[in-house]
Amino acid sequence: MRVKFFCVLGAVVMCAFFSCATTPPIPGEPRAVIRFLDAAELVRKYGRDYKVNPYLAPSGMLRGKPYEFVVAEVSISSPTRALVAIQGVLRDEAGELIAPLATFDGMERLWSDWSGSEVYDPRRQDTLERYYPRTLAFTVHRTRKVLVVFVAKNPIPRPAEAELSVEVAGFLFQQQLAL
Image (cartoon, rainbow, N blue to C red; front, side):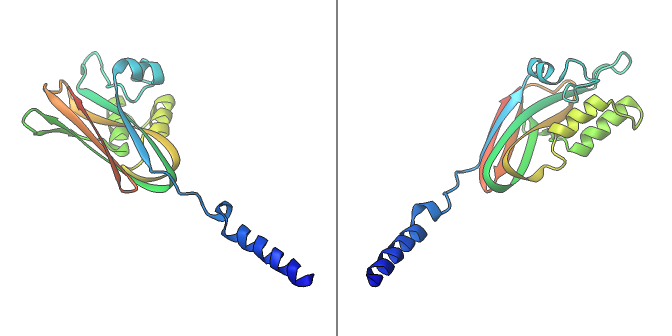
């Protein structure tokens, strides 16, 4: 009787130990969805004035509109912690570089130089800090949405093409926009 009990108990323990329930799930592949945003969508999501929306190019009475922005939204998802690297270029018809992707520090400097002081509009600064990555290489776990900007002199010579590449854990995602 005792031998039977231990045999059954041993079988149950072995089944539980080697069952699928104890095996970690196979993670899915990371994803990145890249969308270029137009001015109407930027206004709807982040405000209609460059004073609160850091993704609209600044303009003024005396200086006019010295910059033109091309904005992309990148939605990243990964079931495990993953390294993300974002690269981008804006090129003219001949393939000459018009503008690289702006860094977070570059965006802060642009707005600081535009306003003429180190004092930022808190709403614009908050939006920039919330959505713009501090560096273009960072770690993500689960999901994250970031916005990145090409800052070019106005007007961008047409035709031109913006190309954005996002690498997530070794998987490469690319998107182009013809201007």
